[in-house]
Length: 227
Image (cartoon, rainbow, N blue to C red):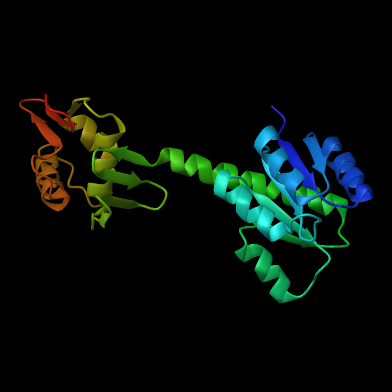
């Protein structure tokens, strides 16, 4: 589905120019020319990105940006004729994801829009990959694991082991399955060595009762609810 871009600029020719280039790039476009209309459009249209002029009648771009940010988590690219570093920083500190000075190249705007949308999409996908089970959170991309906000100091093997267990809560993994999943240069290669890593992992988690349950004669499962 095509992404929707909200263009907010008080110059009609700028609105038309950006609409033409963005629609040619495959985006849907909504336009308006003042601050209050921008807020109303953001609420009604729920755009995927806002191109927002800094100098607007009725309410300036910084205020519009702040109000949109208070209601929605969406990317905003600020457009402005002001070119000083202070103005650029003001826009970015006001919550803008990017900043483009006027006069601008419409093809550059299209490229900027695509870049910001890709960055936001990548961030969203990364957030979806974060595992949260009970008090434990694990981020594979950042190689970070926490218990109620407390960082865990895990070895690479312990991290891979925890990630495997948390990926399927309630599922019983055989020792050999876990060995196959977490095998690396620091692993000795015997399935019973999993028991040692599990013991160390339980200790580092510091949760009682431990969410890592032993399934006798089989292996282990990660389960926060009572069996």
